[in-house]
Image 1 (cartoon, each protein chain N blue to C red):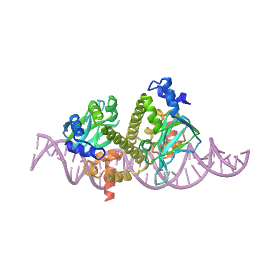
Image 2 (cartoon, rainbow over the protein chains, first blue to last red):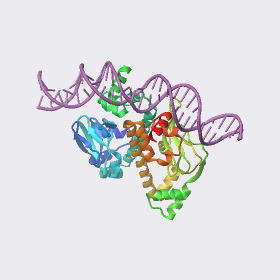
Image 3 (tube, rainbow over the protein chains, first blue to last red):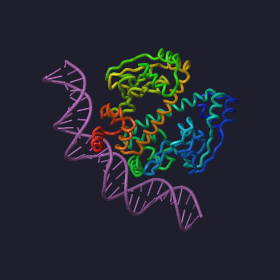
Length: 190
Length: 190
DNA sequence: AAATTATATTGACATAAGTTAAGACATTTC
DNA sequence: GAAATGTCTTAACTTATGTCAATATAATTT
């Protein structure tokens, strides 16, 4: 479980054995069953989680009661309502397991402790945030410009593992498309 | 000119006279005529600018040659391709004056210098980034859920000053709507 | 394994928004 | 201040995508 986290971190930063020890002391395991919530809108996001197994969706509910999917997270992804986690203010997102999940989670104090003892970890987090920031910019761009089909193709191309694993309606919402339309788009592509 | 920057910073952080001195030593003035570029796609964004006068648009060009507006910035806003500024990699955005502009600009070294001597400034920048991050999340959300008219109403409500100042077609692109459609939406609202 | 519930597909139809094209205003530019 | 650009509005028409409803398929639950 920690091995998977270390592998992931090691793609970006170097970790000594003592670094790994500090990190493992500051994360704890968390399991979620399918349909359980990691976070609910209005609560404070006390934890940031690293997914080691399973899949979660991050979403809001709009006025018509529809889920608007902000993010779909599988193994190797980080999940939290970042704004709530950093500010301590109520979260706008729900985060719910769509498969049974295993995660490693840390709170703000853990994060500080790791930053203090493993300075590279701060760099890792900064890079993650930057990548996340531009991913959002790109996604906005595709919403402004592209057609539903273009957006879907970009998505499957970028996240093939997610595309074949997650309910169609979840992907549809992520792309801002009606599920029926996505079903037709898939048919036309084949 | 600096007064306006200080006023803006003072909404969030406290600045002593010596803080102000350090800040003013690390920004320089920059003027842009309408239609001049502050940044062009593919170049490195060496500067972050604070707009003291005028208005700029940040955009990409899609495959059909259309502008996709990422941001519209008036007095009191910061402009840069943040990713490029932080990483030194080529920018994806164009930033162009749509009115004659006056700005205060800093480069990465200036930023470091201010961070070192005016630690509150780092806090200011962090808060700005966080706000920016959730603004993007909200905008994505409105693209996933809302109709063109809803998005327009949210926009005018949030940025009334921009709505009456910037060409309709620019706002239309920001909202992901054809200019003709936005024109009709405006008529229907009255 | 039957029953229940969730998800996906399909067809018929509705509609919001895009496209094209023309003319009306505004703003620059010379 | 005339000419040239750029921007906005309007109307007629097209199209992509949404909506509704029925059925099919798959996945859970008992």
